[in-house]
Image (cartoon, rainbow, N blue to C red):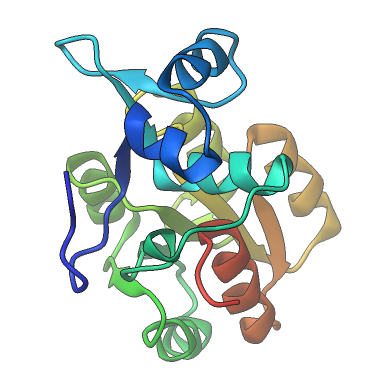
Length: 191
């Protein structure tokens, strides 16, 4: 499961995580069994860990971040209706992230379901659906609950509702630089 320098790696084996933490493989299995690090099992019952969860774990417990976790460009889905802010966001993020800009809410939701991104940036409203509702739906599904969701809107009420629904962050819609910084932190890119 080795990625080339150009190809980012998003899933890691228990052995790789053990190497990152400089611990025995059994320790990783124990941590996973105790729920200390989010994971899933393959049909063959092998442990797999998603990149954002490994980064969160390493940061939480003070482990150094290996270079291979910084490799590649994480995929960010953009579900923002405002054309002016959408252009600014795409421009700001495209150097660091692979940005997928969907033309509408339905296309975006289908695209996220077919090929889950690492993160999704949502406006307060996406078509006729609220960004908070979409975040809640993403977090309820086993196949999408790992996706980092960022609400990109104006109101503090939106912020509170989004965080309660499971959003990773809220960024004010006028702060495109803050959005980029937030995503870089959440996805473990940049320094």
